[in-house]
Image (cartoon, rainbow over all chains, first blue to last red; front, side, top):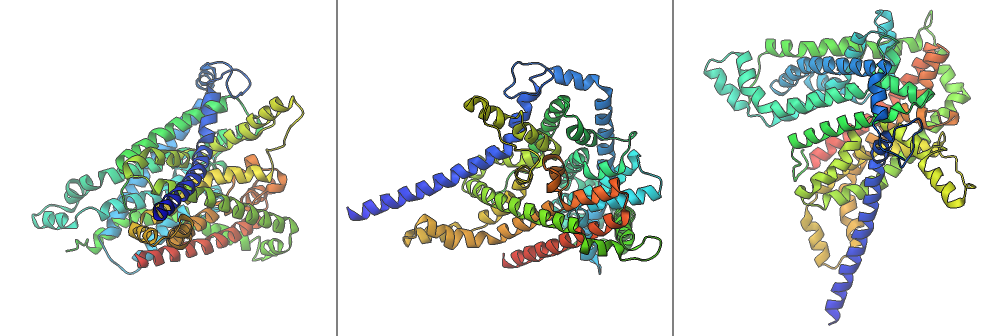
Length: 275
Length: 277
């Protein structure tokens, strides 16, 4: 009798603690989602004043966004930059990741660390350096300058993604293909690439979204002719708070959601953390 | 058997990466270092001003204070979320993970803008306060330090959740069952088993968040006031407003050194964790 009571008691305290932790976790989830939960309804409220909860439903702000050349041209420029950045980082990153995983030479680890460094260096430092560098090359206020800066910035993410794919690819298949007389290029395209396809797609999505959303470096090196969407947004939040911002924010959130869901579908959560 | 590439192929494959890194990463960083010590002749003027200016000291203190508070807030909320996620079956975890990953992928501008709507004078919280008080209550919540901490915590949380969740998932569940059978209560199991075993993840998360917050630019610029400037805003101020590139570069180098120290600690911690596994 005594024994069952203590067991029940300890089960109750355990449940109470679990509930407390769960409540705190839910505070965290809500806090994380708060910006999206606010911005999406506000953007459909329309009108001149941003209100939550919205008083009426309208697509006004979205129509304004697409009618305002000042806004959508920057969105187009951002898309151009992001696509070019993705392409360049694929061209430089995928071969490099392959070389890193299938070779061993003195200084390989150091070079790998160097290639990952742009991910960790404060972007403001990179922005300042890039600004002075591009100013010396007369490349400030050009989209090419932004593409080059963004390519370096996203390369580490590309390398991490592709390398993790290569770790799960079987090198023995490449050896066999080589013995059968396949050329290097053919081995890469027909044997390696199919095995790492989803990692490459993940890397490309990372590259696209990071470039599309990047603001600090772009703010340093763009001018009137090369303004990207985040730079325009940043100035708008700072100086004017235009209601169109709510529509832009909703569109960006939907883009993030689409990419986030694609990523999660591509890499099913593993029961154990990847080591 | 390990498949190896020959030297020529390796060089060819690495060439584009190395060229890009050299021209658009090492060169710009080197330029920052050079500008910090060169202004019509070698000079340590920039660093002398960093060491003596009370404004810069104040901003450094701000940066440290805001970074530490935001990191600690993220740690508390992040740990609760990580435990909640780690306790679930992998199938159930998916939708919950979306709640962590979507903010991770959302532009920081969107989040900052949302917080100006939530916290602003005509914002939701103030509207609510006015409504319940009949118009007399009003709290200044935007353009101060609390707003910066709220915005930064929101940005940092996913970076805290992911490493802690990974180290919680790595724990051997049998340890907990054994402790339970031996009569340990939930608090004791947490402080003696779960928490100590998750410390590598906590450590990685904390270092990651500190590194990110030291260089934070957007959140203090949009949600903070003049007195909440951080180092990154100061770099921008001297570059753009006063065109004092020497001082801007010196501050950037100081920021870089702090970040590098944290990153080296992070790498070492991760290597230890790998060795332990």
